[in-house]
Image (cartoon, rainbow, N blue to C red; front, side):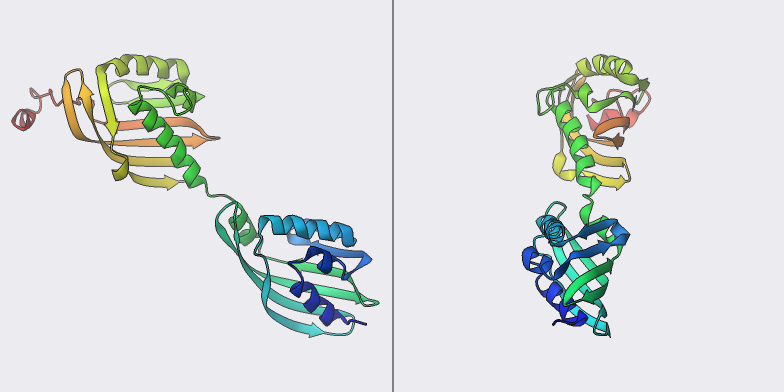
Amino acid sequence: MKNATRLLQDYLATIQDPAAAAALFADDGVLELPTVNARAQGPAAIEKFLRGFLAMVPGFSFHNIRILIDTPDQAFGEYEVEARVPATGKTYKQRYAGRLVAEDGKIKLLREALDTLEASRAFTPDAEPALKAVVMEYIKALDNGGTTSTGGGVLDLFADDAQVYFPKWGVAKGKQEILKLLMEFGPTLKAIKHDYDGFIWTVSGSRVAVEGTSSGEHRDGPWTSAQWCDVFEIKESKIQRLFVYLDPDYAGKDTARYPWLASRG
């Protein structure tokens, strides 16, 4: 008859085989992880739970096993895991502490504790790529005459109550005013192309700042390597706030007030 330590060792060794691991439990045996509010009772439910977890972390296995308490009917140990989570691309690196209670050669209870912060980090996708994707969709739509990659309009990327600031225009509040801004500013540009490879990104929470250069043709003339900076607030994949910082004198015609521009023509 297996004692508690042997049962714990066998469970840890067979974790990649949910049926074999679940068979170590009594008919009313319990696998419990209180810190993540997880509990399964009975071999069938435990097998289902383990299969579900392995589907999320296929390479899940235990190593560095240390048995700290060893009695015939109870064992306590620490063991570690380090495996990749395909859905997020992150590494799940965790140390478990497990207490096992044995009865008649079966696991009556296995209660495990783990680092919930690490679990949350490993299983939560990073927001940064999604935020950058919204920004890139907006900028590429500008370069494509206001049409997004799905054939919609650039206005579709904004929340209904979004705010947009553009120099010398002011703040447009809501889609109707944003549309007015676009209709007044858009016709002044014959073509525009942003230099994607040179973007400088700064991401903090839901705020994204991107700096770069652009080239194109304004109705007053062409321009190259114009510096700009856009600051976005993005929530639920929609632009909530966009403040644009650039010189709206694309063609550099404001020579009366800034005479050095004339010498650069």
